[in-house]
Length: 164
Image (cartoon, rainbow, N blue to C red; front, side, top):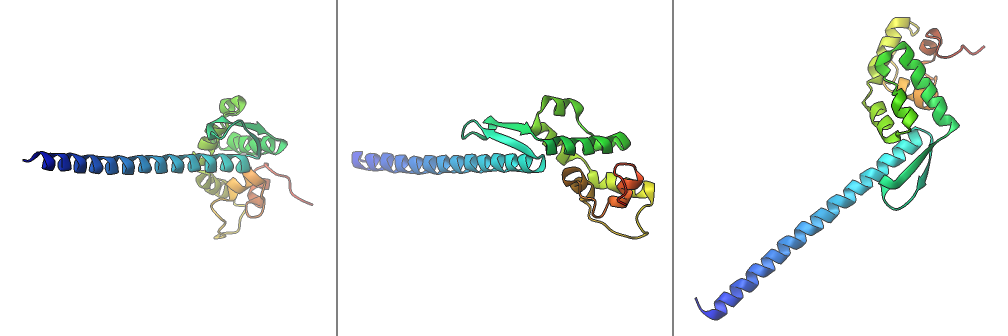
């Protein structure tokens, strides 16, 4: 092989390697950006659903500091009350005490509230036969104190008082 052909081959190999490296770095950056976006969305979810105030110490979502509000404590009281009747609701006393809101959120999202809700309905018989309510009614009650569809069940279980 001639010397000029070797140089061309080396240049071509270097260009190809550079393109491959550039594509790899671009994909890594894109993946990192997607991960950061997911972290910010998770923080937004935690803040809104757990009624927290948040302080951003930097642009890193891992540096966010959460501060419970009165609404946070009321929500936690509802979750704890449901857990006293249905232990599978899994209120995490120690995690809440530590104020590890990321872990509290993970536990909350991993709880099968729709199954507990079905047990509550069966245990009370407070809803008319065949009445269907949204699967998220118990979660809505815990998060927002929504009594819309599950109200009679919650009253019968003693979790809420009947409006007069």
